[in-house]
Amino acid sequence: MSTHPTIGDTLEGTVERYPDREAIVYPRKDQRWTYAAFDERVNRLANALRDRGIEKGDRVATVLHNGSEIALTVYACAKIGAVFTPLNFRLPAGEIEYILDDAGAKLLVFESATREAVENARPNLETVSEYVSIDDDVPAYATGFYDLLETGAPERPDVTVEEDDVYAFIYTSGTTGRPKGVVHEHRDMVAHNLLCIAEMNVTRNDVGLSVMPLYHCAELHCSLLPRVHRGATTVVHHEFEPRAALEAIADHDVTFLFAAPTAWNALSLTAAEAAVDVSSLRLGLYGAAPMPEQVLENCREHLCEDYVQAYGMTEIGPAGVFQPPADQLPKQGSAGLPALNHRLRIVEPGAEPDREVEPGEIGEILLSSPCVMREYWNRPTATERSLREADGTTWYYTGDLGYRDDDGYLYVVDRKDDMIVSGGENIYPAEVEDVLFSHDAIEEAAVVGEPDDEWGELVVAYVVTDGVGADDLDAFVRESDQLADFKRPRKYYFVDELPKNPSGKVQKFKLRDDKADAELETETVPS
Picture 1 (cartoon, rainbow, N blue to C red):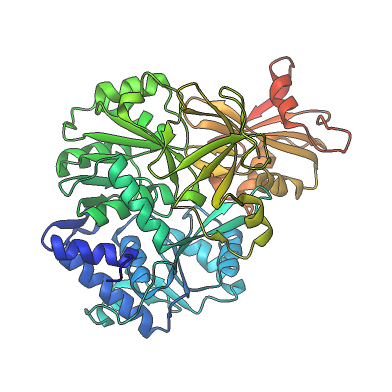
Picture 2: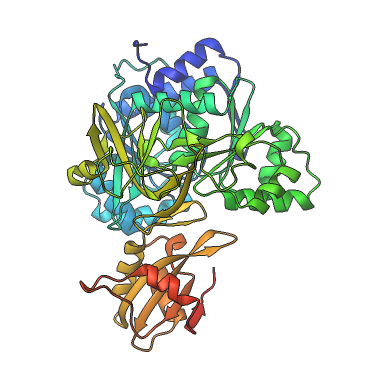
């Protein structure tokens, strides 16, 4: 191990301390692995990937739901210096194609649930030379994951990985609607592990349940990686289902769980009706949005008393601001205080870091973090816009608007770029609008988020059309290869024109402000 550990080193350190403690429990495939057994499989996969020509710096992509396979892959990549590149399993072929080509991915791991989208993208992929399927029904062009695993040597791979080597590309949608690859190094992810361990008091006796998607940095970087670093246990569920999650808490004595507020809401409502013992749960983590007061009350009554909120984004790890249990009620609606070794500023939007506004004044949120990304992959202009140096400190411009109260607590009030957060997923209006604009009958379209009790925000579209209805538009969007299902509009407002400024740009704030005062023709489509 080098002086400054890598993600691979964090696993090996835990193996030295606790070889016989349980690392991964995956009930769907009846898998239970100690740290020693998990590490041996990681080594086998790492060596097998090298045997397939994967070298340090090569990108290894996954289009997977949760499973032991994604955990094995992230650590196998870490040990050989390959760049882990997880994709959202909901993406259609067009988005998969774009990301894999942009990343220059060399190998792709997929499963039966994502096979159709992968196969539709495959003829156009420029760089992927190896395909690996985790299921029994392996297509002719692919290798079986477990067959591959068996071919690898169990010894630690003979590769030197440094702290400033790239650990992962985590793709996040940009304001233009095209995803950008966030480049994280081993160094900043190890720092993020320690941050999460400290802020949530993770111990070797903790048992975490991963029900939120592991392709997403929130579950991956705030839950799995810190637990492995600390020597705790991770129980993995293939997907989120409230009743199954509650039963898993009882069956495995789960002490820690991360979920988006919408999922916490579903868990608390289910727990209120279910006779399931969840008394082992000591702490809940949530992010993406503040927890509504009623949801927090229900969770504290039916699940556990203590909750931590993390605010941030993929570019900073993602957690940069924490609201601990003691602040949940007195500072309800707040995102919390800057994390350890983090600094926070509120400046006039787009202004230099020294242009701070007064407490209570709204401005753009800036964060200085040891966990900040290196860059956006192949996006020097976007990188330059988001990362700025001032007095030897790098500040990340979040694009979020907020203010600090007199006690220094952060309140997030809006997103500078009109991003929509629905069910914990980031959705950028431009990518939805692009699909709508490709319909012949659409003259104008503007997509915004509308507050919703269940999802946080619903994707809604204001459209000027030539006689087409919501059902036809919904069918058109569903058939598109360019848009994941969770991004499609759930409601359409039919208007004669969209409000614009003198330069012709649509003024979305007017759509939101004027809706309450106008009788608009509205059609809702099925969820």
